[in-house]
Length: 280
Image 1 (cartoon, rainbow, N blue to C red):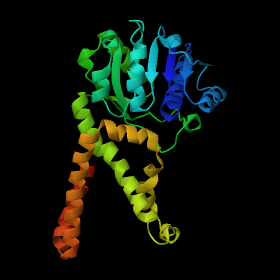
Image 2: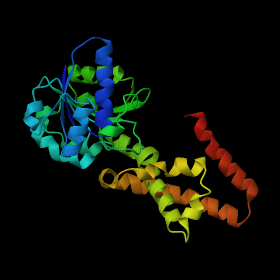
Image 3: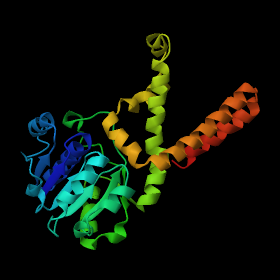
Image 4: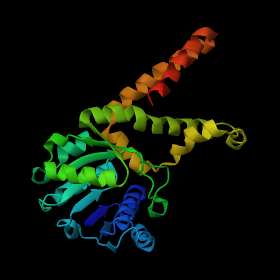
């Protein structure tokens, strides 16, 4: 199988390593060609054997078995027109964290080929050196608007995700973006806000000296690169603002209960939150 990966950072690199491991186990041939605008990423991807070749010409990918887009969501939108001449035998998958605008922008020429996916995986790290072949194992991948796909391309994409150990879930793009605002996008905004609130204290180093597991867990994703998350926040602005308004109401409820010393009601409020983990 010949695969082109556009974007050789954490997501693309991890995908390549996971796929290589599976093909090695089956003693099958796999060739990966990579594209990345960052020259250092290209060098590291070759050194780490994430890719077998590097190219800067997207036309080199248009006849491959699979093209995977693991670049920021605005980058995906920009590159879509360059893929419209892809072979009808080429399956194309994007890993974008938002889906509705991407689905709407897919050129009609490749709509049957193009499987809109969001692997629910990642870390705060970036670049090829952060690649982890186990990143996707046991995680969920959401496939959106699959009714628009040719069954052979959808089957191919599903087999690829199963090969790297993922569980498949289906959702329309509009619902995906609404739900992702709550469970992925808003948590990043909260982490940035938490980190900024500490950094604005008179002596943040003294505050951080007390930091335990809870703070570290909540602030970890504040390390995530702004370029990627600004794109996501832009594309999912309406849903994100709706999610943050919902969060603000809960914060206000907490403030009122504490201010009025309504400890019994606060206990009920906490117990209600505990119920979330019964369905996780």
